[in-house]
Image (cartoon, each protein chain N blue to C red):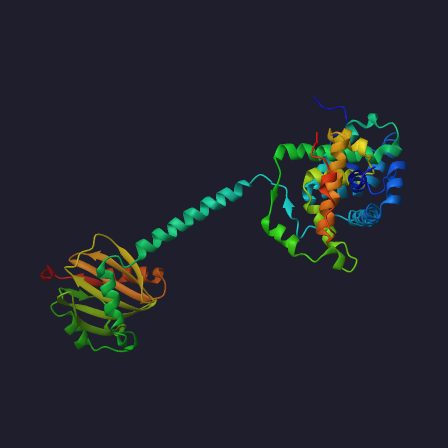
Length: 192
Length: 227
């Protein structure tokens, strides 16, 4: 039996969504936000091809549940949330992730951020190397503009746990960027 | 508010602001400095996230399922290595006969460069060998009766379509089957014959030697007294 919903796109959901009058604004929003979503997925997955897959799937899901979006102005956080969940699904399915010792050594050998005449080379690599448990809330906060409470809800964590993770994420970046470590005792261990 | 609490809040969100925190920052230079540093870092984090992540030195990669072709490639590599070892084993001058033949040819380098051999010398080389050659004498550029394994054997160099070939007729030296070998820059083959075996050696690949051996097998005729 054929699905009465529009069929899923293969190459680019945005390009292939039906341009009916009622859907046109949403399709436009999808198209406008797609680069942002892709960048967000890329920072999460750290792999361009996987990020593309995640965004495609996320947009498809978003399209199917488009009625849940009452306000187009809230499309960005809504879509970012869907992308994050899609990434989490992938993460759960594939039991990610490997750390390359060579790359760790490369990080240690990289020039100090403060010495890199203003470029963000080291910092960007440092963010890439953050464990997902730290990178994810940081991205949600900085990239997505989510509040601590919203992140806590999204990640099913306590607010304290989110604060701790955000603190530690930045503290790790501080150290990698050549600044002294903040007192880690400030961050309690309870992460639930 | 104590410093630890202030730093946790600042570290978690450098742009956070509350009455308690602001009061603490006004009275604590260390936390104020920490706050300034974290705000600067946060601004840089935002700039860093403005473009896609670096790809060239991605430290941590998603662990993708191993592609099936990798396992096949591994299996093929193992198989190839096994075949290579087996091939080397088969091609080695296993029996001393092949080795001695190659060694003998190596000791007679002039045989390769000889350009003419008289019919008389060819007859002399064949005398008592129990074989006759059905080859145009013009093609034979070297002929000798060589001491080999306790007897004299006819040793020739024959010009073939594939180049010069060393031909040694090994009377009474039986081999179980065709053996190829590579030694001292030569390819060789020893093939069983009616009353012994025939060794053919040449420079170059085994394919040429095979063709030469085929020709020699037809050109060598064993005589009744060869037994």
